[in-house]
Image 1 (spheres, rainbow, N blue to C red):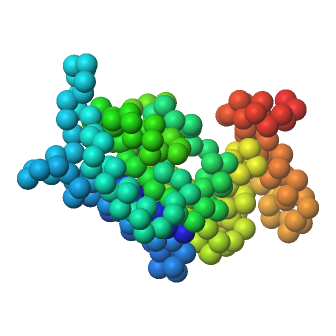
Image 2 (image 1 turned 60 degrees about the vertical axis):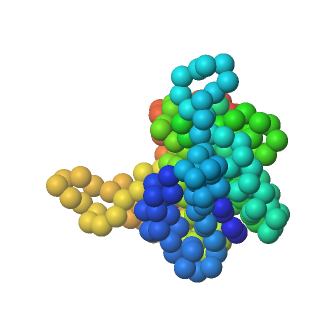
Length: 230
């Protein structure tokens, strides 16, 4: 997989994408992540990438020309499955979307900034808009890092244990069950006996029950989406 991230603040993406699982996936050759500074395609001597909006609204808007030139340059080298724009009014990222994106070959993620981007970019260049929640951030770099992390960890070989991702929260529409490690008792607080039983069937049943109960208590709306009995 290859992911190209387009941004006016590339420094914001350096740490999140150069450590932990994402870095290991890069080291294994499972993914290529290329960060592109849109300013390199900016206009004039000062590499301008933003301008005032028509209509006189407050705030600067990312210009169409630099983004168009950069995306065109990338598309001249390979085909892309999606050009994703990080936008507060896009579809809200969930595990299903991450799963879907993880089987793509080449993705572009365009980070929004300032007041937004010239809408013609969204009309003619962007194929998908994704939000990470109903709030506004200073730019799309953090959402781009979140999308990338959520996708890359699903690539075969990215995790030390291939089955680990299958038990993550939201993979089956439920929250994950509680997890414990040694010691079995600490400060009088004990690990549930069933987890010490060594019986896979009993442990699996307990985990399913706990996942359902935790979802019912903490995120009941997920049960309605999945049509679970309440």
